[in-house]
Image 1 (cartoon, rainbow, N blue to C red):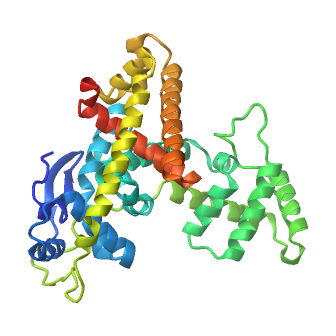
Image 2: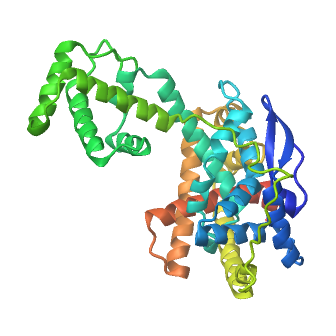
Image 3: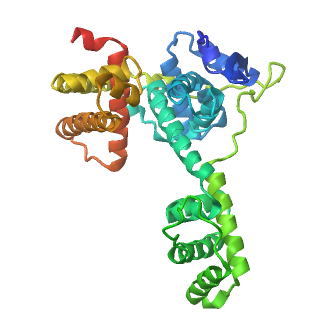
Length: 393
């Protein structure tokens, strides 16, 4: 795949696949005129990262669909490279590079909601980390969905996941409550025997259905149902879970507009100063750079203090791009040992950043901030080793 070179292309073109391979960049005429209009008003701004922050601010402030489409176009490349790396790592899977890409790119809104530029994140790098995480998690979920029977999946699903699935299906609160109560009765009463695995669990027999229905009716005496209705509810629950975990992916390669579409978009209001001026304010940029520099130095010192084997694992993982299994073979150690040591390294670096944040920024660390710190560390490790900075330190 050839990378896009101009700001206009980066914010107005989309990847087109030919079967399982990159084919071309497809232009969206509407977005092209939109970004051109902005550039005409700010010709001095040539940084794609600054334009990304501009569109992010517009999306955050106005929930603008145009802004999100520009960001969707911009994030095509990091999604592609994350997908390609995972496709190489999971070569035995039934899914292609194009499948991986589609899984990732549908999560752009989730990425934007989690992105926080005030913490020094670069959108491309942050998105790359999230794309990889989302694709891996989706593969795991799809594996469970593919291999579980309907009744086995209902046994393995949590109540929280069920409720999320039913809400995503658009069911009413009352219906969700009824289905959840029935689901809890199902899980309580239909326990697989030792000779049957939960994964391939068969349909309950009539005696079991009657017992589940009786348990449900005791909780809701004002709305008694029969066993056939309860079984139908469980089928609906299973269908909702499958659709939630394994949604049909609609191709978004095709642009939303065309070169012939006549629609002039003025994205920078003439009655106010350009938001770009706020984004690139010198004080904010200096403070962010200073924080990133300090965090980077703290992490460099922490990496240098690691044992030689830990440093070797990091280099094999981030420089050579080896999988955990490949690293294990190269170092002649079990794969689970590699996994455990990688996790231990990241936890140690997280503790270092956690301590620094408390001492320097006086931040009370919440679960959301911990997730952000994890992303910062993963992003830093990728940049640190890919840039060759470890050689000169």
